[in-house]
Length: 320
Image (cartoon, rainbow, N blue to C red; front, side, top):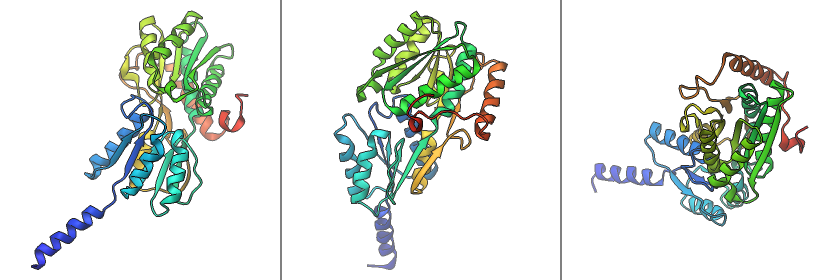
């Protein structure tokens, strides 16, 4: 064999051996217009910038979580990124069995030397949208619709309630959770039902942290002429004119950065780190008043400096 063909064969083998990153989307799928889709956008950004492919899998039932992670590991995917707290145990099991591979888990903590745990300070971003909701409300009543009733979602509702009462101490906050099983993330009809019930009680601004279920909440708000607040991805575009804002959680940045390289340990992303924020764009610009902007920016600075201490439900065990 001449030197040139041999070189080409070696280069081809090197390319074949190069590990591809992998992302495992949780229940609701990569086009849930929320949490999973934000992760998908991060993976796509990495693909566009590098020109390299990645592996992916969408979980449709809980039994697939460990199977998917193990399948990716057997294919030598590196890193393997699991989106959602529900994948924590499966990532932990597989990471122990494949110590030479790197893993990342979003919204959970796994204490292993080859795993990066990426978590967010959802309470901080939720505090800011609580301020906006309370200022926008004409009735003094705001609502929250969560997906699965777990401490993580209580962290959202707790931050939202604190922000609303910071802006208006007399504000009334209604809180409903969709369910106690993973199906709670993908039940738009139930989300709409809960939102309509809140509207009937006087609520005129509702914040949904419920994955695909939130789509029903936003539609119900539009139909009733009320305001809604999106979550995770910027969802302002779904119903321009009735989406007050979105509490953006930068899952896209988390996946993008993990694909570039995993740093084992816990990474916590809040306002200071740019991990959470409120979304203002052409779709909601007319709804965001100068007062809202002023109050939000002041609160943001005070949270970052530590002057405002937002209660974290997950560490406090309660919203007080």
